[in-house]
Image (cartoon, rainbow, N blue to C red; front, side):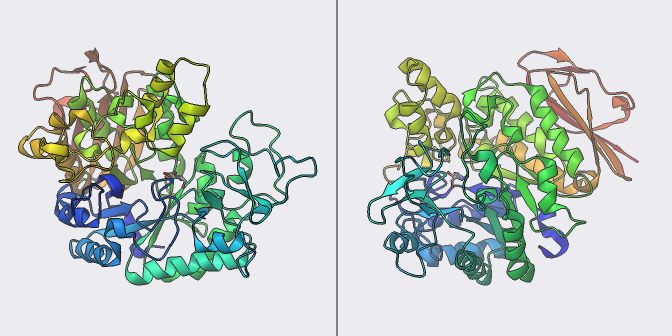
Length: 551
Ligand code: NOJ
């Protein structure tokens, strides 16, 4: 656990390395590029960085298929470049957390290669099963990326489990030797000075005894069985006891389908927590069902219910991780905001979560309001999950409808390179970019926004600065107002020194906002807003305001 809970005062910036900034001209983002941009990240007011995987990997799932846990990929600059970035971040007062991906490894990892050959002690490092006598798969679970969760390995003469891509073999965490390997990895990075981990689908690591069939779910079979499995708490406790408790580090667990109640089993500060925070998925589901590919019209009340539920249920017990974007979901301006009002809605979305209680994370490019990407050809997509969705799911629909599903749901929309300038390749690389650049880079880019006082970028800076200055944001009471409104999200924060009222309009219409009772705007100080001129309590499209009363 982090001493003094330092993570509670931080604002993190997430780097998805391939698309952040290329520093050596080979077309791929790298740590040289990150080093160049450390001051930029700091200038946002961010004082923490989460790196999506930097380790050697065949790249089937853009680095989430790791083939060597104790190294940095050459394409990102190798270990020397990493150490330079780590030192550079620390010198600037920024913490650095790594991605810990131990539900699975790449099938190219040495452990897997030895396991399939039954070389000890690796024989039971993975989840191997013989075919059933009737030739059927060991169970009926689905992979979350492509097809079923089992692939036959000729060499071993057995099936192995993979909850994600075929090349991402699930580790057998029930094997104590595997848990020792995980601890070795953790100590390796913590001893080097890393400040913690974001733990990839960590709630999947304990599978139920006997791997029974899923008889309930029509799709995503198995998810309720392997998520929060029987020994999860025990294993996390072990990692905590043997490693984390000995370092001043933080842990952030990713968990699809987690509820506040479940999360508290692990993060309740009054009850021997084994983790610091959770990445929950509910705030991503206000325009979809279960996955981003099952797209529905955006429903503000759904979003508000989730925001408020997490604020209230964790209050006084656990700490929220706050985010609206990451590398796994399309861009928010295009989803909960509006591309037509890119600037206004980009700013409003920032306010919708930055003044909540918790530790905010900002995903690269979010701070300039980057939007979704609309390729004309499905072949342009790179992501393994996206490609499966197009070529294997909903195949009866017309090609246009199937392409539209990807526009709405693909993670690749958040993976186009960061738009640094209006120059060639958006200033991302001097070489040939590894991936497509969003065509709107001439209109949306960092360099132009640096020069514009009213840009989304400078708005983020102001919002983060305020967040850090205002005592009520860290620990004040949270209350939602006007819950029934399907246009406005209104919340207040209050401590013994001040009271804040925050309003976010989620509509393209100009509409009257009813100020909650007990808040007299005439005596309030307006701290932040995304329009120059205010029109009483009539809010313009995607308008947002932050008011304060000092006690
Ligand atoms: C969650 C990660 O965020 C995602 O990018 C990855 O594909 C899966 N876990 C599998 O590791």
